[in-house]
Image (tube, rainbow, N blue to C red; front, side, top):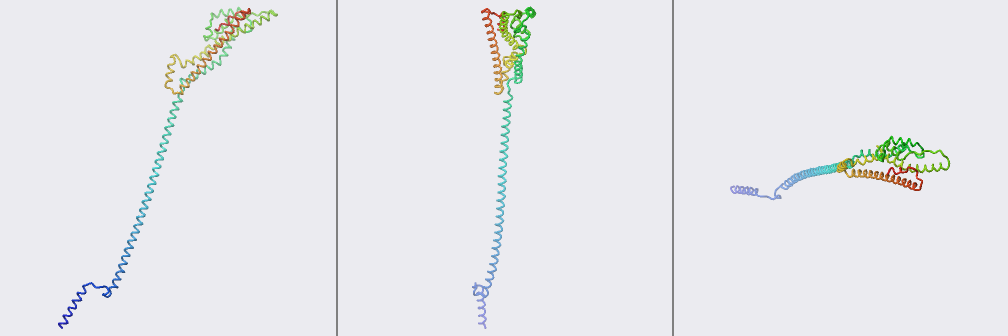
Amino acid sequence: MRAAATGGVIGGFALLVLGTMPAAAQTCAGVEWRVNAQTIALQGVVSGQIESAQAAMLALDQTNRARLLSALKVMTKQESASTDQTVLMEQKAGEAAASAIATSTRNQEIAAAQNRYRATGYGACAVGTKASSFYAAVKAAPQARAQILQTVSWKPGAYGSQSAWASGVGASGPFDANSLFAGDTTKAAQYISFVMGPPDLEEKTAGAGSDARKVDKAGRDALKSTAAYVMASIASDYATGGPVEKLRAMNAHWLASDGGEAWSAKMADQPERGVLQDAIRVEAANLVTLAFNLKSGVRQEAVTAAYLLARIKAAMGTAPGPVAAAGGPQ
């Protein structure tokens, strides 16, 4: 029995020792099934974890992708808006600059035009009025000349009383050629009547002698008419308010009593346009003055020719009486 007990203790000890030692799965009953079951369970857990992680990753990826796309869209919109704002700002800045340039250019053009066209020369309105007065006087001069000739006692082809002529000359006082230039047309007519001499007495005789005297009278009247016309023309030009007076007033517009000092001082700050306008007006006045000088020369030539004709007729013995009158207006 002691031997059996001892064997049992040894066997139990051996089982205890063997039980604590690793054993192969194939040597353990039911181990394979349990391992397979655990493996399957673990596989399910791992697969679930993988699927959850994958799903989470996909969701996160989608979220991140959406965020990225959203950020890109926002950034694109911001860039687009910024670009639009920049373009609009540049456009508005360009429009403002163009408007400012156009306004500045227009203001400069207006200022230049005002500076240019405000220049109308020295007293443009005054010289215009004086020129108009001169033109009116020139137009009225022929009528004034005709009126002077109407008041002269001598008339071409007419006969009259020599005593009446002498009485008129004596009552009018002394005469000189200055009466033609003094401006008084009445005095000028009296002087012309004096120069023309007494009228011819009409002879009632008939026949060839009478016809010859009529022809001789016509010749004398023709010579006298030239002198009378020239003297009346001079008197009408120099009459008060006549062309010469108006021409002198127009020329005095620039010269005045200071020799043109005020005119030159005024024109010193005038633009070129005003200076040119005044230069044209001055040149026009010079041409008118030259025309009057030519007219005076033509009248002198006419009187000289009449005087020479009278001298020739006198030398030929057919002097027409008091022809010295023809030299009056020289």
